[in-house]
Image (tube, rainbow, N blue to C red; front, side, top):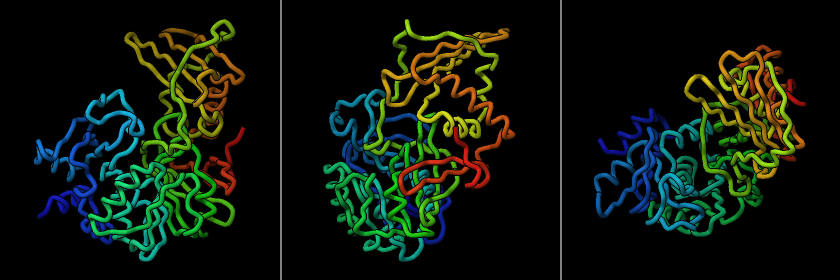
Length: 377
């Protein structure tokens, strides 16, 4: 049995998707030198010429390989594996084929892929639906050029275009499937517009409050509706990148109050509460820190707003009330607390009861149980 078949068995693939995977030589899409990032953690450099067996094991295991850092601003030979930022890769097969399974491409489907990367997924989709049915868009010209070379070497020729993925590609629409290999905070309305009714969009949705989700949306006439599947974290669509950093500033203008709500209750509430807070307190990032002695600190900040609102609340064992410090036009702790209490009033629904609607104008609405039960402020 080949290494590719072993990997297909490890991933539990069967049917047409397994056949498509086995039709694509993954090693063609992995550079001779890169940084392996296994699913079970830990990064390490790989080099085909210096350590060929190690390189082969990385190629045919559940391992991502990072192929670009800091939008090619960092020399791969001098990269800091944990401080520099990956900006392109070939994803772990486990998560890549989970997305493709959720996407469910059918024979002859017309597919738009957003984020060509190394070209591997475009090749798998080409093997599944026919290369003439696959359009793949990539914002980085150097990445797109290498992907096209990889695809040619593997024997595939889907359409690869250099363009902003947020715009999709109207010329080849309507699509039956839209597959995003980069995360988004907002699903672009163009993707909805360019997908035929009944078509499917699968995307790593990463609004920022916590780790991202695999979301599968089905398009109706003026909107796409769908539910959340398992968790997933991906590199962000470059058009939607935002600074993610907690910073205490304007302390002299901050306001200090108290709350009776134990901040641990929010931190430990789980995925349903997270989605409710995402809906009712949008664009807020929460950072919990647990210290020895039972102390828990919760920090909140506005995503993409270095001088924007922030809040902090500390739990101290034995306290009847907990100090809250807030700054900015938005009172982030108040918003998050109110959203959490609303979630409790709804009966503490789990993530399996939540869904997402995306309108053609890009408006997002989270709902519970059915699209008509929208959570809004």
